[in-house]
Image 1 (cartoon, rainbow, N blue to C red):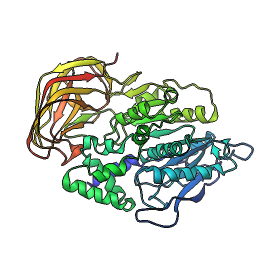
Image 2: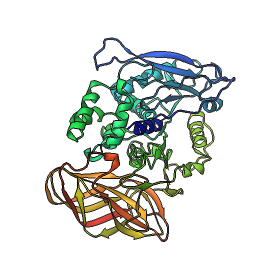
Image 3: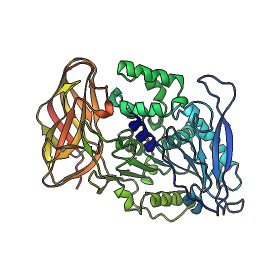
Image 4: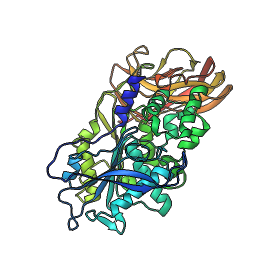
Length: 496
């Protein structure tokens, strides 16, 4: 467990490069007052502490845009002199934030709740608007972007959407979130089956920051093996999915960078943000770049594979260069030279890059009936097609599902190999299917993990079905039995 927690912290603590610089002044460290804490209730405001980095060239007569930055889960703001040099050298101010419950900020972490962290971001933006060296779009409206990954991506959506909910618009002009979520409930407990390996690691990484609701919900989940109703309610508002359901969209450019082999916030979360959280105009000016990395713990049961790297960003000069150009184009008015807006740029498991206008399935393949045990047993692989073949997007499985047992669960994925014996799961991701009660035969559509892979000649594409997964330890079926799939069709996003 110590290894898992260490890996989790390494994945979520996305910190920008720091380098000494004599050119830019040392940062100012200030705290701004935000909404009071409610768990436990406190009468006074909560202080949200930030470090303000000003470029050497910025002044009242030469104003610059500002980027908000924040840390990963369990981390704290970047405050050391010499940090953010590449942004400062490029003419951006940076404000790094200790989020509520972390670092020097007060309160407890409500995990990007609009009523708490969303309000906190608004208070920070208000402070930025008072700085006389910051460029403005209008009164109290700074020219504003945002950077950061994981929890440091979640604050960007929390702030922008909370502003839209309150005033109908956001003061952010562009966002660049990395490896973050669309729905925390779908990420932490897809189909209400808990990603126990990640949930346990994240819980342990920030014990002092949790509210009493989260402490109680975690304990209940361990005892029952279910995703508690209290957790569903706690996380329901805390991401773009909530705002999309309320009819809100972002009408600003967004650079989404997502780990396809990320098995906490997988590719489907970025696809949902790209497809649902943006207006058509915003999407036409936005980019989605998938790479192999992020919160990427290796799968042993079932075994998975992915060549680490960022092949698609390499075509833009690397992600750091792409991000700076994106921010310059949208905040500084630089010439628009980036290509690929409105498209999905997805790194394959083998190390290539596929660019596509759609992630929807294009091809259907019928499979034989499938029988998998529940609660115990080994993975099995069912052949779908031979290579050469390229898939990139979001596959699904249609079948008539029957279960002999209560609360039956199985895990599904696409895999590649020369035979069923050596097939490995593409980009380390599986998704669960759950039947809560006895089922004598109901047609279901089962989502499979979004992937990108180029299957060469001599290898084949398989459907992997397993009763257990090490990403969902102790959250397989609640009683022994079998799950039977008949009239099976897999729908594949075939490209090229």
